[in-house]
Image (cartoon, rainbow, N blue to C red):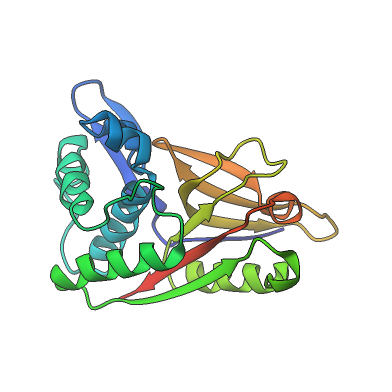
Length: 210
């Protein structure tokens, strides 16, 4: 078995001091307004990526910033730049342009990389190319934003939704390709090959290097 993780996944642990509950990555349901809670998956994933880039590179110490209260402030701030349209953030281009603009405003001179999966399968990259893209990001200690427009037969993944990939797992001799994602403040496991084989609308992947 081969497993590739970002170097410090615990950096994305969030503590709710009022309940002592621990989350992994932020949850769009923490947003104040109903519209934000409905459409806030893209900004929430942006928060995960920006926070990790900022604090994993030793630019600043993350001590004191891993509370739910601190993340709520970050979520509202990022929302002003990574703002969903009436259709959410349905393309990788909308996502990486908005996140890169916010990052540079905050002094993070990031570069973005993306891999799109089209609706029409003949135009899609091979699964091996997608795996190479994700593995390259994780080996460079960069979480991956994953846009899923149709989850196909993968029932552990919501449609028209952004999540954060933090690990890739492959077992020799098996068809399943598992990724660990952050969603709703939890770590979930999904079968990426099952998604790739059955999605009808595709999606895409984005990561940033700093």
